[in-house]
Image (cartoon, rainbow over all chains, first blue to last red; front, side):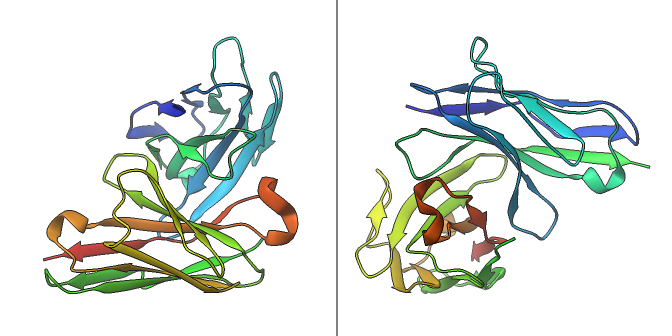
Length: 112
Length: 118
């Protein structure tokens, strides 16, 4: 079945550091890939997505590229801020499915 | 963006009692809502798909008599954990999609409800 494997956290960085959160997936066909973010006390919000190979999703300085050859969708940001502290979830959805399959989430803490 | 609201955000109950969690779409109509369960440091696991006006579709291994789902209107789905036990303690999250956007529209998530069963 489908699965998503995320880098285990927690991750602690200093402000302005470079961020990478690894995400790999297993799925048949060509799923759509997503990153969701969950700030403390809030629901999950879509951060970015990519629907086909080599697509790059970007939002709020975060980027992720859909790599079919490595079945990966790593999240990156060049300079993190304290306000980026949150839990990040990688997820996929097969074309024929209505629901998402999630990774386990990665807690990010950015220190001033 | 669209908002999905859950209530209560945190509930503590005694073993053997039943607890109801509400999920509302505040500014759109959702013919389908999804209920997830999240254990500490684990991924969100889909429990069931809630369909307005019809029976919910449960994932394999989820007890439908234990987790009662009702989707009485286009903006409200409820999850009732019946005869709760400590192993039911978890974080429950719902999500919904604006029915006008079809099956590929963005999913919006509630803030989650933490259930603690003593």
